[in-house]
Length: 341
Length: 297
Image (cartoon, rainbow over all chains, first blue to last red):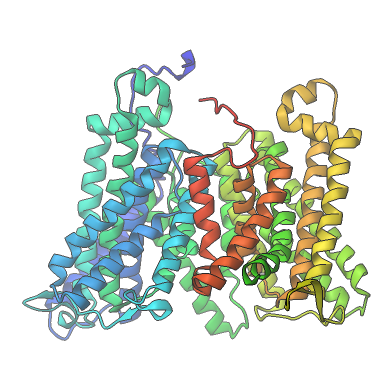
C-alpha cells in the first residue's frame, strides 16, 4: 500500500448532487407525489395522464435497478454488465411461481428476491478470481447465457415469454386502484425504492460499508486489516441482485408478461450508464441518472412523432453520450466533484 | 463420417472467428484494452465490401481488399478519437471498456440510421458447388467451394501474419510492446505508432472477416455484436495475448458450435461462445496457450 492512499479519515465517497439539481429534484418529486395522491384518493380526479404515470413507474423501476447496481459499482468498485440478469431472474421466478404454482404475488416477490440473490451470489463468485475488464466480460456473458436459457426452455415460454401474469392484490387487484390502475404499482415501486435507499444509505455508514470502501480502495490492505474481502464482494453482488430481482418481479406483474429480452445486454448497459452518468457511489445520482435515461429517450420519441421524422437518433446519441461522459465527467455528469478530502 | 463432416463444416466459420480473435488478442496484448468496437469494425468491413461488390460492381478480391482496408481505417480512427485521449489521461481500464461500449453502440446504430436496419445480401461471388475432399467405401467428405475458399484465404492470411509478426522488425517491436510497453518506449520505439499499427492490423483482419462472412450470410448493422463476442470468446479460450492460441481457438469454437447445433439444438449454438468464455476466465484465465501473467494488485 502506498502512503498516499492513507487518508486521515475513511469516509464513504459520496459525491453531492449538484446544488442546482438538488432542490429541483426534490421539488419535482414533491409535486408529482402530491398530484399522484390526489389522483389516487380523490375519485374522478386524473391530473397526470396514463402515459406519464407509465414513465414514472418505469423510472422508479430503473432507479431501483441503478441504486442496486450501485452496491457493486459504487461500493466495491467493480463493474458489472450483468445486472439485467437478476432483474430477469426475478421477473421469471415471479412469473413462473404465479402461473404454475398459482401462488400470490406476495409470496412470489420474496421468492424472486431469494432466487435473484442466489444468482447474484453465483455471479459474485467469478469476481473473486477475475476483476476489472475481465469481470465486465464475464458478467456480460452471464446475462446473455440466461437470455439463451429463457429462449430455449419450454418452461419459460421460449422466445415469446410468459403472458397473463395476475395483478398483485391488496384486497382489490392492484390494477383497479386509482384513475388509471397504475397508481398502486407506482406506490409499490416507490416503497421498494425507498426501502432500498434506506438500506443502501445505512449500509454505507455501517462497518459493512467501511469494509466495502476498504475493499474498493485496496484489496490487499483491506484483507491485511482483517476484512474478509471475498465475503464482502459476494455480499455486494447478492444485496444488489436481491433488489434487482424484486424490481423484476414488480415490473413483470405490472406489464403482466415477461420476455427473454429482459435479459438483453442492452438493458444491462443502460442500467450501468444510469449509474455512471449519475456518478458511481451516489444514491441521488443513480436515481437522477435513471430518470434522465428513462425520460430523454421518450422526448426523442415524441419529437420524432411530432416532427414526422423517419428515424430516431436516440440510440446513436446514447453511445456518444457514454463516450463523452467517461471522457469529460468520469465522476458522473449529474454530481459535483467528490466531497472526500 | 458424419461426425467428421460436421467438424469440417465448422472449420470454415471457425477460420473467420480466428481472424476476429487475432484482432482482439493483438489489441489486448499490445494496447492492454478490450476493444469492444471490434465487432463494429467487422461490420464496417462487411458493409464496405458490400458496396464495392454491388454499387461499384467491383470484382470480389477488390471488394475484399476494400472491406479489409475500411476495417483497418475504422479501427485506427476509433482509437485516435475515442481511446487515445483516455489512454493519455491514464484512465482506468474499465473506463476505457465502457467508452468502447459507447462507441460500439454509436457505430452500429449510426450505420443503422445511415444504411437502414434491414439485412443485405452479397451478390454471388463464385459458382457454388460441393467439392469432394475424400471418399472411401461409399461415404464422402465434401466442402462447399465457398467455404473452401474462405478456409484457404484465412490460412493464407494467418501465415502472412505469423511471418510479419515473427520475422519483421515492426512485428518484433509489437511482440516486445506486448511484453512491456514502457521498456519498448525507453528503447526508443515509437509506441503510439506501434499502437496505431496494431489497430490497423486488427482492423484489416476484422474487415476481411466481415467480407468473408458477408459471402456466406446476410449482413446488417447489428451483425457485429454476436460475431464480435464470439471472436473475443475465441481469444479468451486461446489465451488473451496469444496469437497462435487465438488461431487455434477460433477454429475450435467454430467446430464446437457446429457440433452443438448438429447434435444438441440449433437454439443453443450461439450460447456456446458465452459458456466457453466464462468457464475459461473463471477456471483457467490464461486459456489454452496464454502465458500465465501475474496480475499485480
